Length: 103
Image (cartoon, rainbow, N blue to C red; front, side, top):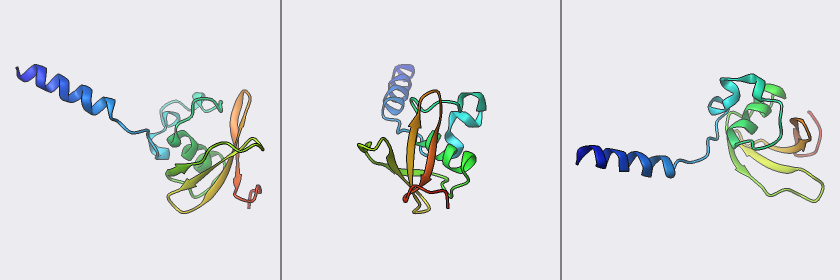
């Protein structure tokens, strides 16, 4: 009985697990070779690229907006920084500030 209850609890807690959001939770922390795509990224992966690839103050992505017609979407970092993310074919995303620049 105890084993069944423990198994059910594990299934329920795993099924309800939230998407990782912190750069330190990104799969890229364990295998940087995977950081060469714009496909299937979690908020943690976006935070990792913003912080480690571009140097933005973005330890965690707290919000992600829908893609725009212009081909980018906006993320909000725990620091309050808003960044534009441009997914790119076969490479990591381009990430700029909300105005589209790097400063």
